Image 1: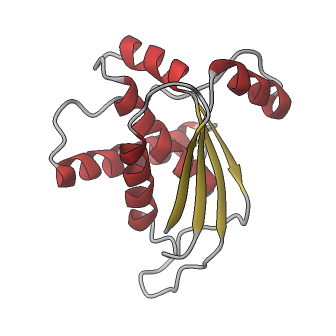
Image 2 (image 1 turned 90 degrees about the vertical axis):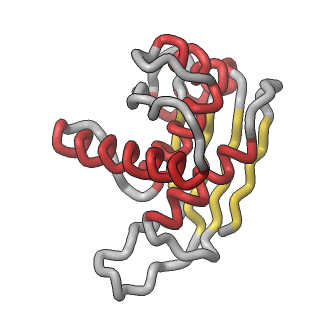
Length: 165
């Protein structure tokens, strides 16, 4: 899996954990190992600009996803996953820090960025949370992937509750 993490934010983040969470989520979703993903970390001003430009909403947000080839997980276990360019996930550590501190489970900025990375991957794969059923499916899958990733790595601490959007 070719995943680039480009930190343009000026914030010190755990890039390795973002990379590893993305790689794990893509493997769990059975995305072709030669697919490509870009993760860009920006400051609040840049995120606000993207949020206004693409969503017509004010203020910075936590994560935005920009799909390219519209890849989807294979429908059946014996199906070969398609290869392609997944797209870009844009993260904002400033917003992630505030959300982590405000969450009921109170967790670190890096833990929130890990959650947002998995969330962004699921958006790239076509998952959404506009409707209650979609939200339950997406956030349930997000929690399972994040919990399993943490358990396999022996990472301590609470599983952050979804605080996105």
